[in-house]
Image 1 (tube, rainbow over the protein chains, first blue to last red):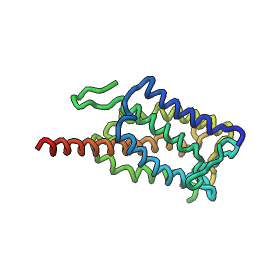
Image 2 (cartoon, rainbow over the protein chains, first blue to last red; image 1 turned 90 degrees about the vertical axis):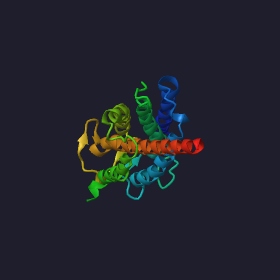
Image 3 (cartoon, chains in turn red, orange; image 1 turned 120 degrees about the vertical axis):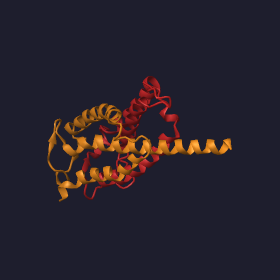
Image 4 (cartoon, one colour; image 1 turned 180 degrees about the vertical axis):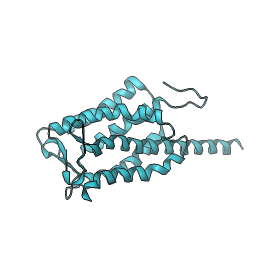
Length: 109
Length: 113
């Protein structure tokens, strides 16, 4: 650990996504139970897929250990991947939610 | 066969989540809304990814990718990742959301009786 070239951008991505919601879009996504239930499901599947991609015995993606905080759990998943994935999925859901169809047929923009 | 691994993982993700399209208004049936949600985020992540690869923060094992290179020196599979994973997430969210809506409507009906 010295560069933190993955840790810092990963944390910043989460901060940026929260800033996008609370400062700009205000979709209310974080107040929707469907979002949190979906995130639990997504993280469950992320552990399987990401675990396969990053397993140290036969990695598809190879990380420079000096650029991460060094925690690899569960399996060999770099801890930063959960920030990376959370920000990726949340950002997409925010943009999706922005164009939610209201029950009266109008669209929220 | 090993070189198909990354692509196979992505294909499996699409296959497993495909039935979720049956719930509610779906995702594939709203292609404009889906692309408007996926593409801007994918663009930002591809820039991040390109920088990370150029800075040797992470790399891709040539054993498990086909070797088709996209602009930015990224494997084609990695570019697809930023479309496939968001699609899976949208399908999950859309399905959970419509299930909760149905549940809420049923509860309201029961209360009215």
